[in-house]
Each structure stands twice: as structure tokens, then as C-alpha cells.
Length: 399
Image (cartoon, rainbow, N blue to C red):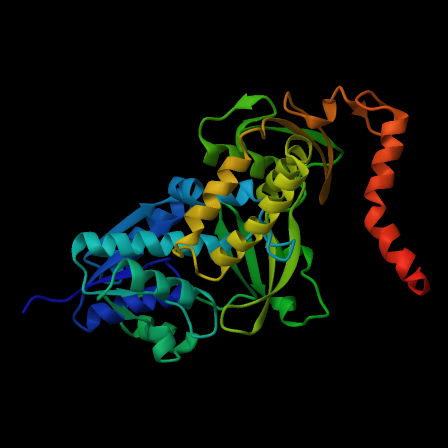
């Protein structure tokens, strides 16, 4: 009988390394697939490939979906200025969805009988992977050894060592998830709600002092230039902004949020590019969108970010939200100017042909040109009518 094919979502970490070896020894043909959304270096990917074959995989592939991740999600997160709890740029949670989609697609291509991942039963990722596989690869078995067997790190390390695979899987004080849209940090002081992360917990540190101006140019809401340098490749533009902002250790914060499974979680992160891009984009929108465009875009963007986090990317309403977000960006053109300094930045201004503050009808706080003084007084009197009616009847309620 032919062996069953199983695709392992392979990150190179302890859980997925154990999964590759255990399933190989259990008689499966293991296909190790690393879905890269911008968090792996070429050196890491090469090491993953070497280790996958050492662990017994019959095939290893890297599925690079970084640009797909931008086109199908990051772009809309920028359009919507999406920050969960007005804080976290939804880094890992959105990446996991596209990693899962890539794995499911690959499993379908090779006719896999099963898909395996290394999630535990205590976090959000198990939901993001399982739900995506159930929808995108219906009928394919889902295997989760770490979750189902409640395996400890020691059990997994001992198994690997006993079967001839030796690697440094020592438990570290902090765990990191690195991606193009930021790095999340778990463990250490974050387990104590009264503490923040110390300097040594972060991967990027201050390398520049003083101040520096950063200019980000947008066309229809998408980045086209950074400090005057044009970028057709939006991923490259994000990486350039990350390089500039990380030198000042910008984008550090800690988020406390509600997990999908119902408990609260605390995560630290460093995300220079997302923070700078979102605030630059928001600044430009303030000048180029109408009041009600901004209001309604914020409402749907909040849902978009929540659905991404809650593993609802495949919900049919998401393309509808994306359509509105895209439409809202038709006049979001121009350059946002920021001033950077160690650990922080400030917004300075915008340069845009679509800037609505350049109206000939008046200059705020200075002089009106589109109405007379009497017209202004009449407008104010009419505007006050509902209040005058109410308090005229309810005189005892005047504040």
C-alpha cells in the first residue's frame, strides 16, 4: 500500500521538527512546507531545508507568499489604519491566515491525505490553521501532535535526540515571531501584568541619535516613494521604512487583548514600519478625505481588523469591506512628513494636491470667503433649533 502523504506546516521550530520526525517514523510520506510571509531570512530558509531532510521529509518547499500577503491583506490594513485596541498592528494573526492558505493550497496540489501543524491547544493559531484547512482543504485530515498529546518541550527534545537529530531547542526566556508587519514578543516579564519588557528583550535597538525627517508618498493609499525614492514593489517600500524606523527603535509597545478562545493575552511587539506607515497614512487622510468618509471607513476598518484577528478572513463580507476601503482611497494622494527620534516620532504635515484644507472658501480661524457674517449667524441659529426647542420645554434640565 502506498504511504499516506502529509504536509507539515514547517517553521523549523521544536514542535514542527518533532512533527516531521514522528510522522515519518509513523509511516507517512512527509512534505515539509515553510510558508514565508516575510519573516524568514535566506539563511533561515536554507537551514530549514537542511533540517527537514535530516528529520525524514521526502520533500521540502518554501512557499513565498509575502507579496500575496501584501496584496490580499496588508494593503487593506493600511487603507484602514488597522490597529487592534488602537495599539497592535495585527502582525502575527494576519500572517498566520496566509501561511495557512498557502499550506492548504500546496496540500491540494500534491493530493495530500493530511495536513499537520505544531500549534498547542492554548492559543489562537490552532484556530487560524484549523479553520483555514477545513474550508480550503475539505476532507483532508488535520494532525496536531503537540496539541493532541499535550507534549512537553522535554518530551519532544528527548524524542528527537533519541532518533539521532540534535539541535539547540533550549527554552528561551522570550519567544519571537518575526514578519514583515512586525515582531511579536512573548514570555518573560510579560507574564507579570505589572511589568514591561526590558531593553534586552527587543531585537532592534537605537543605532541613531538626533532627529530625522521621513517622507512617505502615497498614491491612492499605497506607498509609491520613501524620502523621494520610488518603489514599484510595495513590500520593498515597507522593508525600507522598517530599516529607517528600526534604527531609532520606533514602534515598541505592549498589547493586552482578548483571544479567540476567550482568555486574555499579553504580547509585546516592535513594529517600526507599521506604526510609521499607518500614522503617515492617517495624517494624509485627515487632509484628503471628507468627514463622513473618515467616519465610515473607520467603522468598517475596525471590523476588518477584528475579523482578521478572529480567523474570519474567509468570511464573504471581507471582499465587500475591501471594496469600500479601496474606494475611499481614490484621493489619498501626496506625501506625509514625519519627524523621527529615538523611541518615537511626531507627525509634521502633508504635501498633497488633494488637500482639502486648501479650500478657497475660507481659512480655519482666519477669514471666511464663501459666506457672509449674517449667513454664519443664521446658520448657527438654525443649528441650535433642536436644543432651543428641548430646553424651552424642559427648563429644569439646563446644564
